[in-house]
Image (cartoon, rainbow, N blue to C red; front, side, top):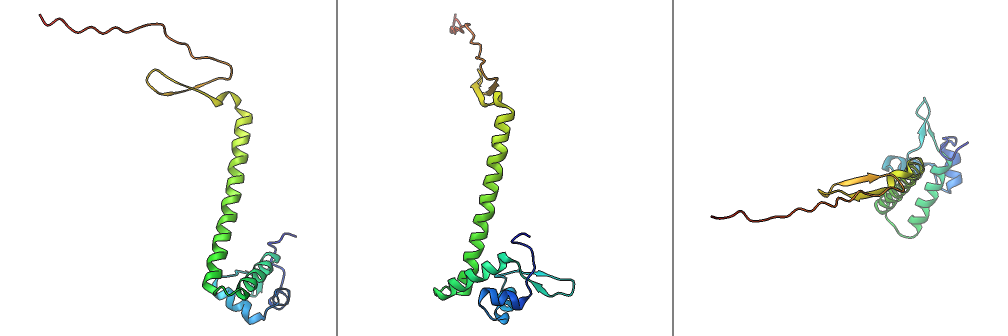
Length: 138
């Protein structure tokens, strides 16, 4: 069973959170908590919802308004989402670096373009020289 599994009816979730069921209904209407719904439209709360309700109660006792609580929870959700995305991208980068180690070496070409080199290879240098002389004005 995962923390997101919607298993608690509203009365049990309210008891676990130390709140009145009507408060949970109000928080649902305000969008602070979004419980799952059954086919008959009954609310079902997950353990994650209960933890969130406890956090709302804690912030409320510290004097934070419901709008402030909504904004704090929104920002915390955004941080969690972005942290998950960073971990996902770090994993993809690590996998790519392991699968293609030769693609990590670069050099600059004559025209300034980026040239990808295989690991352990060197750029061939041209020993040609260009000389410029002004045209005779005669």
